[in-house]
Amino acid sequence: MRVAVIGAGIIGTSIALELRKRGAEVTLVDRDEPGRGCSFGNSGAISPSSVAPLAMPGVLASVPKMLVDSQSPLYLPWTYLPRAASWLWQFVASARPSIVAASAEKLAALHAGALAAHRQMTTELGVPELFLQRGHLHLYPDEQALAKDRQGWELRKAHGFAFEQLGRPEIEALEPRVNPRYRVGIFLADHATILDPFRYVQAMACAAAAAGVRIVRGTVSDVQAHGSQWSLRGAAAMQDEAFDHAIVAAGAWSRTLLEPLGFDLPLESQRGYHLQFRGARDVVSRTVVLADKKVFFTPMEEGLRVGGTVEIAGLDAPANPRRAAVLERVARQNFAGLDDVPHSEWMGHRPCMPDSVPFVGRLPGRPGLWIATGHGHLGLTDSLPTARRIADELFASRA
Image 1 (tube, one colour):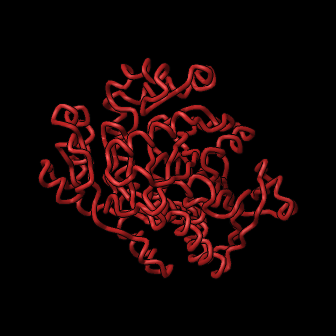
Image 2 (spheres, helix red, strand yellow):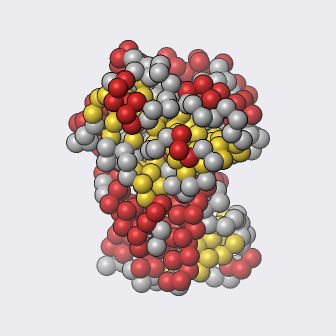
Protein backbone atom coordinates (compact mmCIF):
# COMPACT_ATOMS: atom_id res chain seq x y z
CA MET A 1 0.00 0.00 0.00
CA ARG A 2 1.49 3.32 -1.15
CA VAL A 3 0.47 6.43 0.79
CA ALA A 4 1.36 10.08 0.24
CA VAL A 5 1.11 12.43 3.22
CA ILE A 6 1.01 16.11 2.28
CA GLY A 7 2.33 18.28 5.08
CA ALA A 8 5.24 17.57 7.41
CA GLY A 9 4.10 19.39 10.51
CA ILE A 10 3.43 17.51 13.73
CA ILE A 11 0.18 16.08 12.28
CA GLY A 12 1.56 14.84 8.97
CA THR A 13 4.81 13.55 10.44
CA SER A 14 2.94 11.63 13.14
CA ILE A 15 0.69 10.07 10.50
CA ALA A 16 3.63 9.10 8.30
CA LEU A 17 5.43 7.40 11.18
CA GLU A 18 2.31 5.54 12.36
CA LEU A 19 1.48 4.28 8.87
CA ARG A 20 5.04 3.12 8.32
CA LYS A 21 4.96 1.22 11.61
CA ARG A 22 1.91 -0.64 10.26
CA GLY A 23 3.64 -1.58 7.04
CA ALA A 24 2.59 1.05 4.52
CA GLU A 25 5.02 2.49 1.98
CA VAL A 26 4.90 6.17 2.87
CA THR A 27 6.04 9.37 1.18
CA LEU A 28 5.94 12.56 3.27
CA VAL A 29 6.07 15.77 1.25
CA ASP A 30 6.29 19.40 2.32
CA ARG A 31 7.59 22.62 0.83
CA ASP A 32 9.84 23.03 3.89
CA GLU A 33 11.69 20.77 6.29
CA PRO A 34 9.59 18.80 8.81
CA GLY A 35 8.24 20.90 11.65
CA ARG A 36 9.25 24.25 10.18
CA GLY A 37 5.70 25.63 9.79
CA CYS A 38 3.07 26.08 12.48
CA SER A 39 4.57 23.25 14.53
CA PHE A 40 7.76 25.26 14.96
CA GLY A 41 6.16 28.01 16.99
CA ASN A 42 3.43 26.46 19.11
CA SER A 43 3.40 26.76 22.89
CA GLY A 44 4.20 23.11 23.51
CA ALA A 45 1.12 22.42 25.63
CA ILE A 46 -0.33 18.90 25.83
CA SER A 47 -3.80 19.78 27.05
CA PRO A 48 -6.32 16.93 26.79
CA SER A 49 -8.84 18.84 28.93
CA SER A 50 -9.20 21.57 26.28
CA VAL A 51 -12.64 20.47 25.17
CA ALA A 52 -14.27 23.92 25.10
CA PRO A 53 -14.37 25.24 21.53
CA LEU A 54 -13.27 28.76 20.66
CA ALA A 55 -16.88 29.74 19.92
CA MET A 56 -18.80 29.57 23.18
CA PRO A 57 -22.29 30.87 24.04
CA GLY A 58 -22.21 34.65 24.11
CA VAL A 59 -19.44 34.98 21.51
CA LEU A 60 -21.70 37.12 19.28
CA ALA A 61 -21.40 39.96 21.78
CA SER A 62 -17.61 39.95 21.34
CA VAL A 63 -17.68 40.29 17.53
CA PRO A 64 -17.75 44.12 17.46
CA LYS A 65 -14.64 44.25 19.65
CA MET A 66 -12.95 41.70 17.41
CA LEU A 67 -13.40 44.09 14.49
CA VAL A 68 -12.21 47.32 16.08
CA ASP A 69 -9.68 46.44 18.79
CA SER A 70 -6.34 45.32 17.35
CA GLN A 71 -5.26 44.33 20.87
CA SER A 72 -8.22 42.01 21.48
CA PRO A 73 -7.31 38.37 22.18
CA LEU A 74 -9.46 37.48 19.14
CA TYR A 75 -8.98 40.01 16.32
CA LEU A 76 -10.38 40.20 12.79
CA PRO A 77 -9.36 43.35 10.87
CA TRP A 78 -12.07 45.08 8.85
CA THR A 79 -10.09 44.68 5.63
CA TYR A 80 -10.32 40.89 5.86
CA LEU A 81 -13.99 40.75 6.84
CA PRO A 82 -15.37 40.17 3.29
CA ARG A 83 -13.18 37.08 2.89
CA ALA A 84 -13.85 35.83 6.41
CA ALA A 85 -17.58 36.56 6.47
CA SER A 86 -18.71 33.01 5.69
CA TRP A 87 -16.34 31.49 8.25
CA LEU A 88 -17.31 34.12 10.84
CA TRP A 89 -21.01 33.36 10.33
CA GLN A 90 -20.37 29.64 10.87
CA PHE A 91 -18.17 30.47 13.87
CA VAL A 92 -20.96 32.45 15.56
CA ALA A 93 -23.52 29.74 14.70
CA SER A 94 -21.24 27.15 16.32
CA ALA A 95 -21.65 28.90 19.67
CA ARG A 96 -25.15 27.47 20.13
CA PRO A 97 -25.22 25.29 23.28
CA SER A 98 -26.15 22.11 21.41
CA ILE A 99 -23.25 22.51 18.97
CA VAL A 100 -20.83 23.41 21.77
CA ALA A 101 -21.80 20.22 23.63
CA ALA A 102 -21.35 18.12 20.48
CA SER A 103 -17.99 19.75 19.73
CA ALA A 104 -16.78 19.09 23.27
CA GLU A 105 -17.71 15.40 22.91
CA LYS A 106 -15.74 15.12 19.68
CA LEU A 107 -12.72 16.94 21.07
CA ALA A 108 -12.66 14.81 24.23
CA ALA A 109 -12.75 11.66 22.10
CA LEU A 110 -9.86 12.85 19.96
CA HIS A 111 -7.77 13.96 22.96
CA ALA A 112 -8.11 10.57 24.67
CA GLY A 113 -4.76 9.04 25.55
CA ALA A 114 -2.71 12.03 24.40
CA LEU A 115 -0.61 12.37 27.57
CA ALA A 116 0.45 8.74 27.68
CA ALA A 117 1.05 8.67 23.93
CA HIS A 118 3.41 11.66 23.98
CA ARG A 119 5.26 10.37 27.01
CA GLN A 120 5.81 7.07 25.24
CA MET A 121 6.74 8.74 21.95
CA THR A 122 9.42 10.99 23.48
CA THR A 123 10.95 7.91 25.10
CA GLU A 124 10.75 5.93 21.86
CA LEU A 125 12.45 8.76 19.96
CA GLY A 126 15.25 9.05 22.53
CA VAL A 127 14.21 12.53 23.67
CA PRO A 128 12.43 11.92 27.02
CA GLU A 129 13.85 15.20 28.33
CA LEU A 130 11.38 17.06 26.08
CA PHE A 131 8.38 15.78 28.06
CA LEU A 132 7.72 17.95 31.14
CA GLN A 133 4.76 16.91 33.29
CA ARG A 134 4.31 19.58 35.95
CA GLY A 135 0.75 20.53 35.15
CA HIS A 136 -0.82 23.65 33.67
CA LEU A 137 -1.72 26.68 35.76
CA HIS A 138 -4.51 29.02 34.55
CA LEU A 139 -4.57 32.38 36.34
CA TYR A 140 -7.31 34.97 36.90
CA PRO A 141 -7.27 38.35 38.65
CA ASP A 142 -10.33 37.47 40.73
CA GLU A 143 -13.43 35.32 41.03
CA GLN A 144 -15.35 37.58 38.68
CA ALA A 145 -12.83 36.96 35.91
CA LEU A 146 -12.97 33.21 36.58
CA ALA A 147 -16.76 33.31 36.30
CA LYS A 148 -16.44 34.42 32.65
CA ASP A 149 -14.79 31.07 31.88
CA ARG A 150 -17.10 29.03 34.08
CA GLN A 151 -18.76 27.27 31.15
CA GLY A 152 -15.42 26.02 29.87
CA TRP A 153 -14.41 24.63 33.24
CA GLU A 154 -17.80 22.98 33.63
CA LEU A 155 -17.30 21.27 30.28
CA ARG A 156 -13.92 19.97 31.44
CA LYS A 157 -15.47 18.66 34.65
CA ALA A 158 -18.34 17.02 32.76
CA HIS A 159 -15.80 15.11 30.70
CA GLY A 160 -13.99 13.79 33.74
CA PHE A 161 -11.00 16.13 33.96
CA ALA A 162 -9.79 16.94 37.45
CA PHE A 163 -8.54 20.37 38.49
CA GLU A 164 -7.99 22.33 41.68
CA GLN A 165 -8.81 25.95 42.44
CA LEU A 166 -5.95 27.84 44.12
CA GLY A 167 -5.62 31.08 46.05
CA ARG A 168 -2.74 33.53 45.98
CA PRO A 169 -0.50 31.64 48.47
CA GLU A 170 -0.73 28.43 46.42
CA ILE A 171 -0.06 30.36 43.21
CA GLU A 172 3.07 31.90 44.70
CA ALA A 173 4.28 28.48 45.85
CA LEU A 174 4.10 27.23 42.25
CA GLU A 175 5.07 30.38 40.33
CA PRO A 176 6.58 33.07 42.58
CA ARG A 177 7.40 35.49 39.73
CA VAL A 178 3.85 36.11 38.57
CA ASN A 179 2.23 39.51 39.11
CA PRO A 180 0.38 39.76 42.47
CA ARG A 181 -2.75 40.90 40.61
CA TYR A 182 -3.46 37.25 39.84
CA ARG A 183 -5.31 36.02 42.92
CA VAL A 184 -7.16 32.94 41.62
CA GLY A 185 -5.75 29.90 39.86
CA ILE A 186 -6.96 26.66 38.33
CA PHE A 187 -4.36 23.89 38.38
CA LEU A 188 -4.46 20.82 36.14
CA ALA A 189 -1.78 18.72 37.80
CA ASP A 190 -1.43 15.97 35.18
CA HIS A 191 -1.03 18.12 32.04
CA ALA A 192 2.29 18.33 30.25
CA THR A 193 4.53 20.43 28.02
CA ILE A 194 6.90 19.66 25.16
CA LEU A 195 10.00 21.78 25.76
CA ASP A 196 10.94 22.15 22.09
CA PRO A 197 8.16 21.31 19.59
CA PHE A 198 10.44 21.75 16.57
CA ARG A 199 13.06 19.35 17.93
CA TYR A 200 10.25 16.91 18.70
CA VAL A 201 8.98 16.93 15.10
CA GLN A 202 12.53 16.67 13.80
CA ALA A 203 13.20 13.63 15.99
CA MET A 204 9.95 12.07 14.75
CA ALA A 205 10.90 12.75 11.12
CA CYS A 206 14.33 11.20 11.64
CA ALA A 207 12.71 8.09 13.12
CA ALA A 208 10.27 7.95 10.21
CA ALA A 209 13.08 8.22 7.67
CA ALA A 210 15.09 5.55 9.47
CA ALA A 211 12.03 3.28 9.32
CA GLY A 212 11.72 3.79 5.55
CA VAL A 213 9.51 6.84 5.08
CA ARG A 214 10.62 8.84 2.05
CA ILE A 215 10.69 12.58 2.81
CA VAL A 216 10.40 14.84 -0.23
CA ARG A 217 10.97 18.61 -0.25
CA GLY A 218 8.54 20.26 -2.68
CA THR A 219 5.31 22.21 -3.06
CA VAL A 220 2.16 20.27 -3.92
CA SER A 221 -0.14 22.43 -6.05
CA ASP A 222 -2.85 19.89 -6.84
CA VAL A 223 -4.11 16.44 -5.91
CA GLN A 224 -5.62 14.47 -8.81
CA ALA A 225 -7.52 11.22 -9.04
CA HIS A 226 -6.44 8.62 -11.60
CA GLY A 227 -8.89 5.77 -11.42
CA SER A 228 -8.53 4.35 -7.94
CA GLN A 229 -5.22 6.09 -7.29
CA TRP A 230 -3.97 9.59 -6.60
CA SER A 231 -1.14 11.73 -7.93
CA LEU A 232 0.41 14.94 -6.67
CA ARG A 233 1.20 17.81 -9.00
CA GLY A 234 3.84 20.42 -8.30
CA ALA A 235 6.41 18.30 -6.49
CA ALA A 236 8.84 17.61 -9.32
CA ALA A 237 10.30 14.49 -7.73
CA MET A 238 6.84 12.85 -7.68
CA GLN A 239 5.24 13.91 -10.96
CA ASP A 240 4.82 10.42 -12.40
CA GLU A 241 3.98 8.57 -9.21
CA ALA A 242 0.62 7.15 -8.20
CA PHE A 243 -0.53 6.41 -4.65
CA ASP A 244 -3.27 4.21 -3.26
CA HIS A 245 -4.07 6.87 -0.66
CA ALA A 246 -3.35 10.58 -0.29
CA ILE A 247 -3.65 12.32 3.07
CA VAL A 248 -3.98 16.10 3.14
CA ALA A 249 -2.39 17.34 6.35
CA ALA A 250 -1.22 20.71 5.06
CA GLY A 251 -2.58 22.77 7.93
CA ALA A 252 -4.07 26.12 6.94
CA TRP A 253 -3.18 25.44 3.28
CA SER A 254 -5.33 22.29 3.11
CA ARG A 255 -8.35 24.21 1.86
CA THR A 256 -6.46 25.32 -1.26
CA LEU A 257 -5.69 21.70 -2.18
CA LEU A 258 -9.26 20.53 -1.62
CA GLU A 259 -11.22 23.28 -3.41
CA PRO A 260 -10.37 22.03 -6.96
CA LEU A 261 -11.91 18.69 -5.94
CA GLY A 262 -15.20 20.39 -5.15
CA PHE A 263 -14.80 20.29 -1.38
CA ASP A 264 -15.02 23.64 0.39
CA LEU A 265 -13.47 23.02 3.79
CA PRO A 266 -14.53 25.82 6.19
CA LEU A 267 -10.99 26.44 7.33
CA GLU A 268 -9.34 29.68 8.42
CA SER A 269 -5.91 30.55 9.71
CA GLN A 270 -5.67 31.41 13.39
CA ARG A 271 -2.60 33.55 13.00
CA GLY A 272 -0.67 32.93 16.20
CA TYR A 273 2.30 34.91 17.50
CA HIS A 274 5.01 34.11 19.98
CA LEU A 275 7.98 35.82 21.59
CA GLN A 276 10.98 33.80 22.68
CA PHE A 277 12.90 35.40 25.55
CA ARG A 278 16.42 34.00 25.41
CA GLY A 279 17.86 32.63 28.61
CA ALA A 280 14.70 33.21 30.68
CA ARG A 281 13.39 29.67 30.90
CA ASP A 282 13.21 29.73 34.70
CA VAL A 283 10.70 32.59 34.81
CA VAL A 284 8.03 29.86 34.91
CA SER A 285 8.41 26.20 35.81
CA ARG A 286 5.42 24.86 33.86
CA THR A 287 2.85 26.07 31.31
CA VAL A 288 1.14 29.12 32.79
CA VAL A 289 -1.90 30.73 31.16
CA LEU A 290 -2.97 34.28 31.92
CA ALA A 291 -6.57 33.44 31.17
CA ASP A 292 -7.87 37.01 31.04
CA LYS A 293 -5.24 37.83 28.39
CA LYS A 294 -5.38 34.46 26.56
CA VAL A 295 -1.57 34.33 26.71
CA PHE A 296 0.54 31.23 27.37
CA PHE A 297 3.92 31.25 29.13
CA THR A 298 6.00 28.13 28.52
CA PRO A 299 9.49 27.11 29.64
CA MET A 300 11.40 26.00 26.54
CA GLU A 301 14.87 24.53 26.19
CA GLU A 302 16.19 27.83 24.81
CA GLY A 303 14.21 30.27 26.92
CA LEU A 304 10.73 31.47 27.79
CA ARG A 305 8.08 31.29 25.06
CA VAL A 306 5.14 33.69 25.28
CA GLY A 307 2.37 32.98 22.81
CA GLY A 308 -1.32 33.05 22.21
CA THR A 309 -4.18 35.22 20.99
CA VAL A 310 -5.91 34.73 17.64
CA GLU A 311 -5.79 36.94 14.55
CA ILE A 312 -8.07 36.09 11.62
CA ALA A 313 -6.36 37.81 8.68
CA GLY A 314 -5.63 35.10 6.13
CA LEU A 315 -2.49 33.50 4.74
CA ASP A 316 -1.11 36.39 2.70
CA ALA A 317 -0.96 39.42 5.00
CA PRO A 318 2.41 40.15 6.64
CA ALA A 319 2.87 39.70 10.36
CA ASN A 320 1.22 42.41 12.43
CA PRO A 321 3.79 44.00 14.78
CA ARG A 322 1.00 45.23 17.06
CA ARG A 323 0.08 41.65 17.91
CA ALA A 324 3.65 40.84 18.95
CA ALA A 325 3.80 44.09 20.92
CA VAL A 326 0.74 43.00 22.90
CA LEU A 327 2.52 39.82 23.94
CA GLU A 328 5.64 41.71 24.94
CA ARG A 329 3.70 44.17 27.08
CA VAL A 330 1.73 41.40 28.79
CA ALA A 331 4.93 39.46 29.48
CA ARG A 332 6.93 42.34 30.94
CA GLN A 333 4.02 43.64 33.04
CA ASN A 334 3.15 40.32 34.60
CA PHE A 335 6.39 38.42 35.19
CA ALA A 336 9.52 39.51 37.03
CA GLY A 337 12.90 38.90 35.43
CA LEU A 338 12.24 39.97 31.82
CA ASP A 339 13.19 43.66 31.87
CA ASP A 340 16.47 43.39 29.98
CA VAL A 341 16.05 40.02 28.30
CA PRO A 342 16.26 40.06 24.46
CA HIS A 343 13.65 38.22 22.46
CA SER A 344 12.77 37.03 18.97
CA GLU A 345 9.34 37.13 17.31
CA TRP A 346 7.41 34.58 15.23
CA MET A 347 4.06 34.30 13.51
CA GLY A 348 2.45 31.13 12.14
CA HIS A 349 -0.85 29.85 10.78
CA ARG A 350 -2.93 27.54 12.96
CA PRO A 351 -5.71 25.84 10.93
CA CYS A 352 -9.07 26.47 12.57
CA MET A 353 -12.58 25.12 11.90
CA PRO A 354 -15.60 27.24 12.96
CA ASP A 355 -16.58 24.73 15.66
CA SER A 356 -12.92 24.03 16.66
CA VAL A 357 -13.31 20.35 15.71
CA PRO A 358 -10.66 19.15 13.24
CA PHE A 359 -11.57 17.17 10.16
CA VAL A 360 -9.93 13.78 10.59
CA GLY A 361 -10.95 11.02 8.21
CA ARG A 362 -11.91 10.09 4.69
CA LEU A 363 -13.26 12.67 2.26
CA PRO A 364 -16.81 11.58 1.35
CA GLY A 365 -17.17 10.41 -2.22
CA ARG A 366 -13.41 10.35 -2.83
CA PRO A 367 -12.09 6.86 -2.07
CA GLY A 368 -8.46 6.96 -1.03
CA LEU A 369 -8.42 10.67 -0.15
CA TRP A 370 -8.10 11.60 3.52
CA ILE A 371 -7.98 14.83 5.52
CA ALA A 372 -6.27 15.61 8.83
CA THR A 373 -6.43 19.33 9.54
CA GLY A 374 -8.23 22.03 11.50
CA HIS A 375 -6.64 21.33 14.90
CA GLY A 376 -6.32 25.01 15.82
CA HIS A 377 -4.09 25.45 18.87
CA LEU A 378 -4.34 21.73 19.77
CA GLY A 379 -2.26 20.25 16.97
CA LEU A 380 0.47 19.05 19.30
CA THR A 381 -1.99 17.53 21.76
CA ASP A 382 -3.92 15.73 19.02
CA SER A 383 -1.11 14.73 16.67
CA LEU A 384 -0.59 11.17 17.90
CA PRO A 385 -4.32 10.45 18.47
CA THR A 386 -5.00 11.80 14.96
CA ALA A 387 -2.33 9.51 13.50
CA ARG A 388 -3.88 6.50 15.22
CA ARG A 389 -7.36 7.41 14.01
CA ILE A 390 -6.26 7.87 10.39
CA ALA A 391 -4.26 4.63 10.43
CA ASP A 392 -7.10 2.65 12.03
CA GLU A 393 -9.66 3.87 9.50
CA LEU A 394 -7.34 3.57 6.52
CA PHE A 395 -6.39 -0.01 7.20
CA ALA A 396 -10.00 -0.90 8.10
CA SER A 397 -11.09 0.46 4.70
CA ARG A 398 -8.89 -2.16 2.99
CA ALA A 399 -10.19 -5.07 5.00
